Image (cartoon, rainbow, N blue to C red; front, side, top):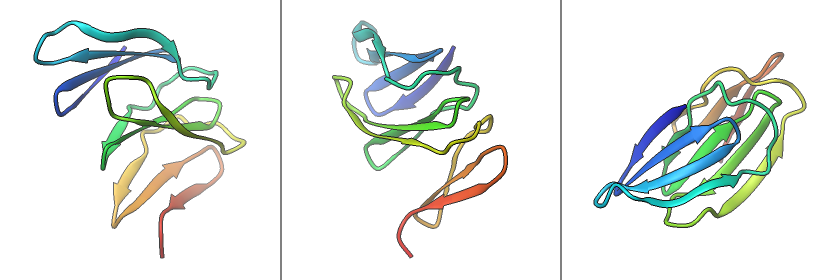
Length: 107
């Protein structure tokens, strides 16, 4: 199980489900909602600019909006496994998959 602190919330990722706790109350905002991307999650989730990015071992990158309800913004399948935590630098999202280093963002 992995935890990620974002303002007013703690996100807990367990396999391919997300639990969201409000940090002011400590009570779950929602529990056991599926992300819609199969596979184990070995990479830590990362947060930036109101979004959380999750990488499944099967290579699906799921982008969710940080908030009180599960709102999946995008799912992108890289077609190869991802076992490392994505990184953010210079306004780009970097993801290392089994055979490639991907960079997403504007030039």
